[in-house]
Amino acid sequence: MVPCYNEQEALPIFYDTVEKIIHEKLADYDVEYLFVNDGSADNTLSEMRTLQAKDPDHVHYLSFSRNFGKEAALYAGLQNVGGDYIAVMDVDLQDPPDLLPQMLDGILDEGYDVVGTRRVTRAGEPPIRSFFARMFYRLINKISKTEIVDGARDYRLMTKQVKDAILSVTEYNRFSKGIFGWVGFKTKYIPYENVERVAGETHWSFWSLFKYSLDGIVAFSETPLAIASFIGLLSFVGAVIALLFIIIRAAINGDPTPGWPSMVSIFLAVGGLQLLCLGIVGKYIGNIYLEVKHRPIYIVQEKK
Image (cartoon, rainbow, N blue to C red; front, side, top):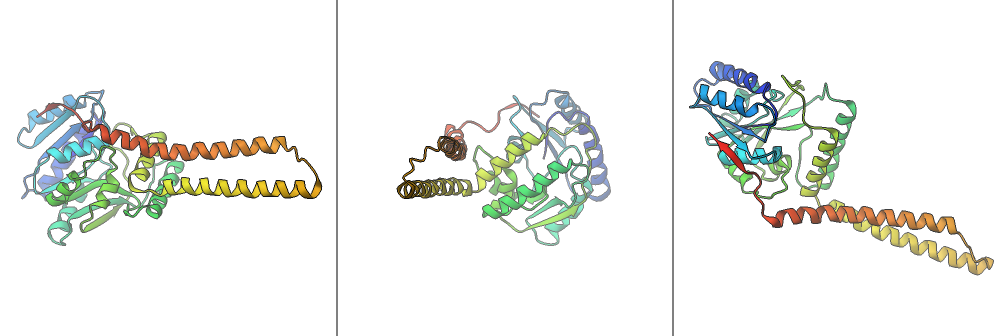
C-alpha cells in the first residue's frame, strides 16, 4: 500500500524497483500494489492509470477528490487492501524495498506480527529538523503511555490481524505512528541508514512537521492539560506571595508602593500564561469538535 502526493516522477521508478526485487527474491508470492492518490496536482494519477493498464492483475489505485493528507491516504489504503500480509511504504524509495524479504522472514520465521523499520541516521536532513525530531521523540515518550520508537518509519509489514486492529481505531484526527504503537502486537524494527529521495522534492516543511508533532502529542497524551493546570496553580501561588509581600512591605515602611511598571509587567505575564493555557485547552477542544462532526476521513473520486 503506497500513498502518493505529487509523485509523477518517482512512481514508475518505484514500480520498476519493487518489481525487480519481487522477481529476484519474492517470486513465490503473489504481490499486489495499491496506490493511493492523495489529490495530486501533477500527473500522478495518469502514471497510476498507465501502470494499472500495464499490469491490471497486480496494480490497483484509489484517487481522492482532493488532498486529504497522508494520514487519510494510509487509512484508505488499509481499508481497501487485501492479502495476508500488508506492507506500507512511501513511493520516493526512502523506504528501501530490498528490506521486504527480510521483513517477511521476520513474520514467517521469527513469529512477529509486525516488522517495521527505523532510521539510525538522518544524513541529508537539515540539522535543525533532525534536532527537533529527536526532541519530539524524547518528549512524547516521556509524556505518553504509548511508545513511539525514535526514527521509526511508517514503512512496515504487518499481518491481516494487525491491519484490522489499526482500522478499528476510527478517530478522525489520526497519528499513525502512535496508532501503530497503541494497538500493540509483537513488533520488530529493522535499522537502516537514511536514503535520499529517488526523485521529486519532499512535501513536508518544518511548519507542517511541527503541526503534525503537535497532533501526535494531543492524540496520545493528556500531559499538556496537566501542564496548563499546573501553570495556572503556579501563577495563582505567585500572585498570592507577591500580594503578601506588598502588604507586609507597605505595613512596615508605610509606603503606598506605586509600582506601576511592575504591575503592568505582572498583568502581561499572567495574561500570557492564561492565553497559553487557553490555547492548550483549545487544541483539545478543537480535536473533539472535529471528531463529533463525523465527517468522512477521505472521499474517493476514482478507483480501479
